[in-house]
Length: 518
Image (cartoon, rainbow, N blue to C red; front, side, top):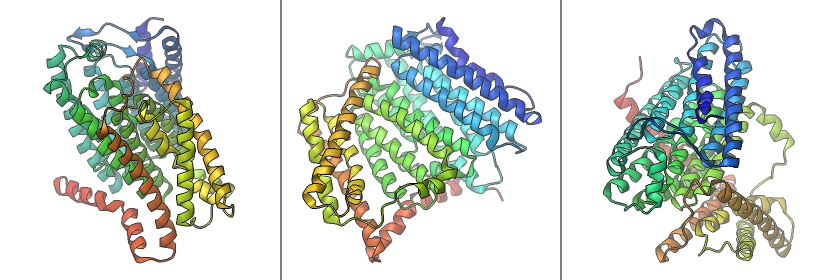
């Protein structure tokens, strides 16, 4: 198969988007859109198999100085390429029935196909210039989808905030591209990555380019303090939310992963990923539990997950972040498309009653971390050799704390500790197996996670674990004390339910700069 045939994937939905007068024949648009998505899915599947068998696929760039049309498909690109094609196919199929009878269905499908085409091109771009064009096209398509119902003021406000954040992010990425072009003489990915791996000196332009690329990624992924637009896109049709949360929002994470060989040369960029990503993950996880709307919960969940992905990148666990990107996309697409059935799902599920005692939560937390540490040491994943994987795995097993404390209600303390430690051990085995698999799949595309380099790194990793443990204990205490009517905890619950008013402040600023239409 000629490498250029891969372009059929983004071209097929683009051709559908270019059809004239889409609203006159919405059923035809739906049928052609699904057919184009299936073509993209087939091409992506064949490409993934070809990369798995023969390795990276690249083409010469039609242009100059690495600026033009060219492809670069390695393990990372192939996985995300296939992921986007699959989710796009599902979302377009869902849209055919979801918007049946809507007078704007054809127009909606046009912009959905155009946006899907842009995201597909972004994943296989062979140089930063083409990547930038696809990056901007994705924002334009999403903005049109956000304004599908232009009379909804909430959608208009969300689109304005998204537009401002996106344009700042576009400017950051454009400036980074100019700096890299001046430093390396090309924007083609293959020579850029080769120079970085060969030990290119991290001079000022390269360091600044890394910071600018991280800034663009943080703005694209709705990180603090510009997360508000993501929460307010619920005014749009559900298929937009599914494609946004499962695909488009990952563009920021994909940028960091794609340019990881260069980002690691910039220490300030890596530190920004840790600080902003960690803060966003903690913030999103706290606010999510106070929301009464299913879609608002999913939105804050996405904010937290994107923050955790950025934290993973900042710690150097790029393979883990790539695995997280794929898993989160599949989960979140299913969550949004099935959100209408949440009542039936809740009735069929086991729901714990009340909040566990704080002492019980502390015991479960200690048992979970102990079980995880024993397995990690036995498998050779020590904090010194694999600090990022160890710390992120420790954060993962904290998710067992509330489940263990409530599922084993009435069990004696020794039995409770033993059962939770056993659960944590099983989770640890699965976690490290997935890490090994991710390193095998993405190892040739991403830098290896660095070992522990000194006491500062050790303190930073301890702070990460302590922060997530503290938030987990705070969540448990807030649930219990708010039910008892304690003033402090009720106030904390109300403030968190309003997102600490960060979005309100952002709304005031945006409306002052860009007033709403009368």
